[in-house]
Image 1 (cartoon, helix red, strand yellow):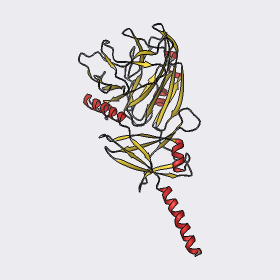
Image 2 (cartoon, one colour; image 1 turned 30 degrees about the vertical axis):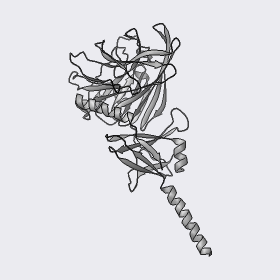
Image 3 (cartoon, one colour; image 1 turned 45 degrees about the vertical axis):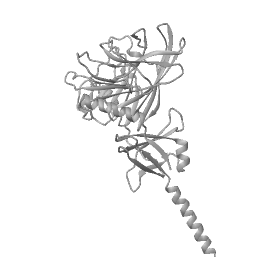
Image 4 (cartoon, helix red, strand yellow; image 1 turned 45 degrees about the horizontal axis):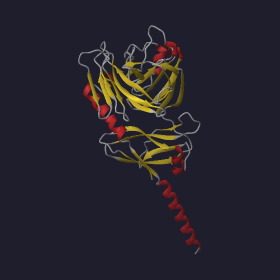
Amino acid sequence: MQKTICSILVCALLSVSCAEQQKSIVVSNPTDVARQELISIPYEEFTTHFKVDSTFSVKLADSETEFPYQLEKRGNTTPENVLIWIPIDAKDEVTLFITKQDTKPTFKTQTFARFVPERFDDFAWENNVLAFRMYGKALEGRADDAQGMDVWAKRTEELVIDKWYKENDYHTDHGEGLDYYSVGQTAGAGDMMPYFNGKVHFTKHYREYQILDNGPLRTTFQLTFEPEELNGQMISLTKTISLDADQHFNKVVVDLTNQQSESTPVVVGLARRGESEPQYDFNESNGSLAYWEPDIQEHGQTGTALILPENKPTFIDNDHTQFLLGTEIKQDKPFVYYNGAAWNKAGQVTSADEWKDLVEKQVEKLKNPLVVKLK
């Protein structure tokens, strides 16, 4: 009798153990597009469900391949989300299993950002595809001052910001890429500016920065602009920018306060190169704009793009120096848009048609995020 009771208890314990081991994450892709991107799960929900803390592994069933992850803190001391990088085919479903580990695994850093005081207060960020920068206070008033967002053309998956700034020769391609993109007095590769009476009003450059997360898979930072009177209205704003590994697009969240009005007209824009028949495509139905630049001094061709998924922007084509998408920012309501780029010499996107197709796929992914369920 005692042996029977013991056997029952052992079986019960084994059943509980097996049930715990079978807990999983099921991810499904509702689109016809194969994807490689991050999924996000609230940290508290994740750790409670799987009974783990910050040390665990993520694998497919019967696979030794570990998927990289990041604990996203959003500037806090404790994590807010668990970010997991996964590849998933079109219309497919994958099941991930979580195993507790004694030590935290390390993953290759694929995103990075930093303040660059040695180059007139630049703020630069990158992933394994592209690099970007915004200009700082020390550049204001100089003959070489510029306004919008810069993009660096890369054909290496390695991070280059520190190396290129140290060598100070990043306008020459030494095999990794170069900075040949010209911003000047434009929005560059997708910046946002107030727009009053048919005129762009450039703000002063950012005054403060805060890095909220810095890789390995997602880098997020916030740039703060001091209050400034524009068209008789006192405006202050912050731009929170995120860039994920493997992606061509930043996510930009603008928080704007206007002391005189409940809404503020703004534009997001792309620098244009003055060609008589530019290769661009504005899709009014999904709020996207894709532009494929001509070859610049044999450095190659850059594609730039904007996506305004939550707005119905107006296409403004009265400025030969830039394409503009006009909209409004409501008081106390974050304005979200995406800007991105590609370089033909990197080999992933080599034509205007390919760039347009990639932008349309990005729109589809934004409209139809991966479906994540804890089992």
